[in-house]
Length: 610
Ligand code: F6R
Image (cartoon, rainbow, N blue to C red; front, side):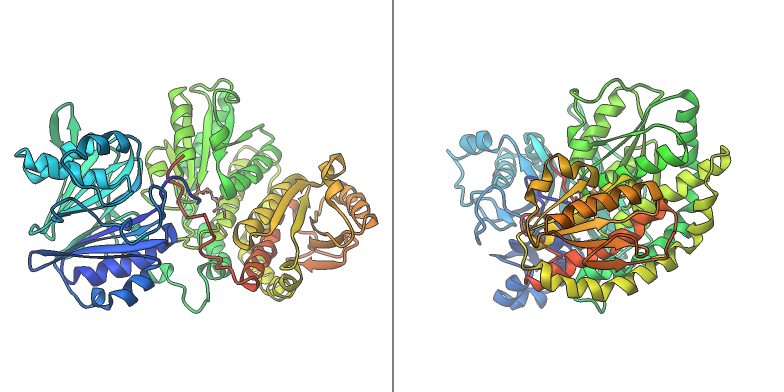
């Protein structure tokens, strides 16, 4: 997740009852942006536009007719403002001077000022958005005598930046699409077709998808889908494959839960079960790439952002300890020439991303590939850009994650690593029996964690909600757990939270501890680590900190103990079971403070810009 320049959602429908379908799909995309919404619909050849600042619900209450108006074609947009304030006029669709061309856009146009200046002699600009230049450029091309397709492609070709664009022309039942570095899919239906920023928006309409690639243009009507790319000046048709996505629409609904985040936390038992069963098919390819790299003595480097970075840290600890092979991990946006070192064809980059669309990860992967490294990705979303740009992919089948904060996909990433690294370990004679014996029981361990920590997390949130700062600490494989606990807390409750390696406390952060400060200490089942944690906890308590421990038994002196799973389970499983109470604690604290955990301020899912 998170914001970049513009995290918007776009939808297009070429078919019956277009307005209602656009609205329903937009609602699912609201996680991508929720400060304005709008639609343009073709009604008997006339284009009707309704747009407003605020949520989609707000659009509907202002213009209730959007649910009833029917229509043969429509586009819609949910906006996350960057260029231009949140206002009715800046909401998309954005129109040209004549009001006969409507455009929705996700991304940023770097040269929009230049284009705007050039066009404003002849064209009247009515919004502060960068998107408006697209509408006027198309209008300009049309007025110079070009046909619609040519005008659309010529206009888009003048843009520098990142975009997914959908456009419609009054009187014409066709969607015109273009993509550069921002996700865009085409849905293939029965007698109608669609487009959207994300497959989940269209799951209620189809499970057949065509992934539009960078530099491609498409024209979509209710009966046809055509895709082209420019080779020099020449427009060349592209044959596209239809991909089946086996996600169901119910996976993208809240069901009985108040928020997606809570639903997704509670889904984790099923997610783990599903990965252990269904993702098995990706194991062979994955371990052959790992094994090959290890045989050649190549570097193994994890690259990821945010929560996926924390999972990658655990991945590195697992790989290093279970397979006794050194690996490294880098935050994707920090993967630059300053710290990249040398990479070559013997090396393997493990790119980890729930969405498979995170721009920082895609950019890092691109530069690693340029050096010759091979790319193995761990991804949730089928057909995502990262998965298509990798040499091998492990899909971890967590199902759609809609809450902005990553929860079930974090656990899915951890389980995918456990599964693949132990399988490889078995084959190369590494000592992994202690993990393989417990792995099949992991779904029930997760279920018991959910059960045992839900209540205590809810109760504790009443105290935590009054804090200005809380600290999380762990050691070894649970240092990333501390980081992840803190990230969840800060991003959805807006309480300042920091994670530290417990041993680092005395080197500075201890100065932050005063009477009553909450410290959340992540326990360990490794006797050496536990002894070290014990002295850390004593230091904290001596300074008046209130210690909340997360453990499998009664080991650390604590003011409050959250006890989960089974005492003594192997250390390798602790990141999975310990993160659950931390997710719940963050969730309940956010709710207790009246925040919406599914839509934290300033953040959006899928960070498609750098
Ligand atoms: C935090 C969160 C983000 C994402 C990060 C990477 O809850 O969701 O930190 O983990 O933006 O996203 P993906 O995994 O899609 O690459």
